[in-house]
Length: 601
Image (cartoon, rainbow, N blue to C red):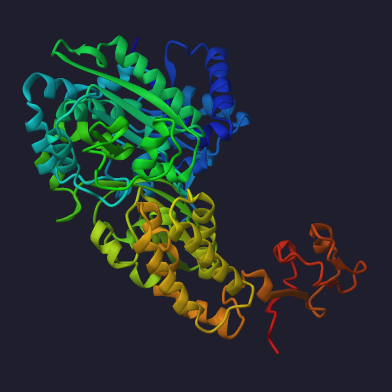
């Protein structure tokens, strides 16, 4: 049946969490009430755009976008737009500078510099219907390699494309496949690393929720290339929707003869399994991941041998992450030359980032390699909320590092990020503004990695604890001369002595913060001051009696009962009870709450 209108309703985890399924039911009710069932259909899609503004809806073929939908909005939207052809401007994206509604998807600044390869089907298909994937060339690449390419030709195509691993250090994908194919022994395995544990990262989850078949097709092609017949998708249990869509996709692909025995009659067999991990950060490290699949403690193994030589159950194993696998079919279909012409000389293609933190347009972004941080933050991200100044961006998660405002024009590729003290990693990008303390920020990531360390290596286990103890002292105003130098020495030692990639990058957030924001560390140690007024032991709140109107709003809002005062009389803050939450300052209309350095004389 041909419908005149398709309603592409985002049903990713973010949108579902804020009521997307309720919106779907309400739209269905309104469509039925107006007898539009034969004219309009709802298509549940994966992450389609700015899902932090969900629930979101795209009306096609009009290309009109709606955001922040509520059930009460639906009757009016259906009647105005779907019946009368008048788009509802009050439900559209509002430009943060002009404050004008933007109607068309392609007009929203968030999309202008994006180029979708990994996310080519984002918001375009129902991920639970393989027919819609096939209609957009799904499994076309698999058919091509099985009918007309040798395994060696597939590997050469991936090598020529310049595709590098999108989950860590950026090792050339084709080279990794070539090594695994050359190793004698069977069976061989392919593994998809979907154990996404970085704070602020949601790339893998969003890719799988939007198009699980892209990952499965890539794995099948990789298996054919290296000589494997079985694969595992290792995904954390905290991703129930992604798991559900993966498992359904596997069943559908089997039914269509695209997985299983003798695929497409070509004599090649491949089976995929979903393995649900318990969510330990260390399982993102490939040898720990393999140990987890084998029901062993998730601890890193000594290398060599590398997984390509001796991996899962001591058999040759090729591991790539979600984004890497999702690129494979597009490269086979479009050609290595097409892919290699995108990006930079050493970093080919596009990269998916989760843009999060203090940014107007948070969401999933796919951009050509080589785009600058300034373009990411301001052109795509829409700048910093509330007119605040950009301070830094943490790239690569807890294993990455901070890049300051002085490097806003830095091109984003593997080598340039490494020079700046960061790494590409899986693509987590957390933006922070002027109100962020970089000492506290570094401590946050170290708390995370210290908790998540598997504890196998003394350098990682004890070194991270020692670094965290020093950072904690500094934020409490107890820092000492020599702490900075000791942090640098300790950080380098942890990098050198740790066995796995996670331990070797554990100190990156601290070392990069010291590289670019050393003055903030010195202010904490020498002057017992937090320039951003974040560290609670170094600040104090008080009320200016000349400005206080005695309205009592701060008293009512204070969660610690630290404020006293009579109505229409100046209030006071008891510093011994104050928990430095800032609620009083945020709620005071008279701007009477003052934030000061505790140790000011």
